[in-house]
Length: 174
Length: 338
Image (cartoon, rainbow over all chains, first blue to last red):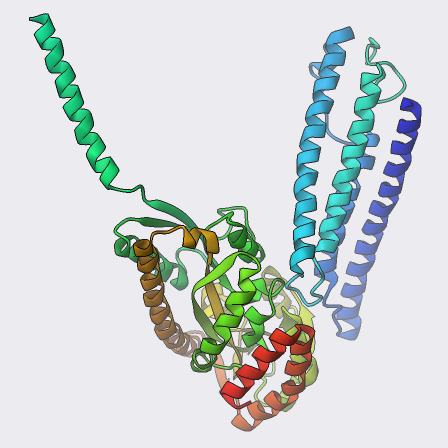
């Protein structure tokens, strides 16, 4: 069961990572087009700055789950590395429960933000008048993927495994 | 003796407690509100708002204490103000119409180019518009306490001056809204989107020839450092700017406190509507005399042509907002005979 869950979490994170990477490419392309069109053709896209902001938000939030999966977040191992056996397991559980709690709270507010923008018809004040629920929904979806990934890790820890790989949580070399 | 002494102490304590309790019961606790601002405390508008909150405290006999919060002090962006006040996260705000353009069309229709040009015209149209805008803001849970206006928006630029309608062709002008972009396209200019911090360097590098703002803002932001001329057709009035309150918070005030607040708001509005247009005139003079900016008043025939160019757009824009916006634009046009 934990293996299936880990596989699903891996795949979901991989897809989110691809979308996040595409946002970087799109952002780079948009800024390049804006610079060239302004300099060479005296024309502005009028949306480069605004859309780059939305793409930055999308790549950040959709990149949360893949970054966690790949061990990309900063982690301070002062105590965790010194603990063994049940004490290590207890610490892992506490950390994951805290992380899930924080991520759920954050995502709850992100969904509320996006749904409020949708309900009230809020748009940006810039030239494009983009409906704000669209970039805000990217944040909420990214937050949801992070919650899912943290829950998958929590299940692995509860099953006695290590959230960081195949080695068990009680393994002395971790 | 000891018994007598302890009785005395108890009696004194009871008298003291009663003395403290009586004024506490007679004096209700003052209501504390926060008001998020559009500008800093040292800006002219900020100084008048400081007088306004002091007046509120005086007129309500200390029953309502409003604390001014400059932008950035509380975690709300200017574009969030209407929703933050509506939800009751903050009880009051001062917000320029441009910042709530993503939430309301009715509340910003006076920003349509060449529809409402001056503060006097705004005063004429607001009695009919205000109830419609109030109804729209009620969707969010907010109400209008009062409104005022920033000065007329005009063109300020460098390089070859714009002095007639024909001079717009091919000129790169900063835009901050779709309405401005549409106007620039119709005038033959090239709209350029830039954030405020980019403006000085963009002007110096020739990425942009002009901005649309008021002399009042040009002076305060020190953008006169790169400006050489001003073309003044009065594109649109810079208002209304709204003082909004949370509907529930307003309703929860006692009738006396509410009246004190509303009286203070009326006095604030009167002062702003008197002082801001006067300041714009004196600031334009300062720009001309101290900063050597050449001022070109637009030819009335050119203004009439620009207005004519924008007329079809007013209707297109109104249709996008639905029947209420269409009705409001028609009402404004009727009031001003446009």
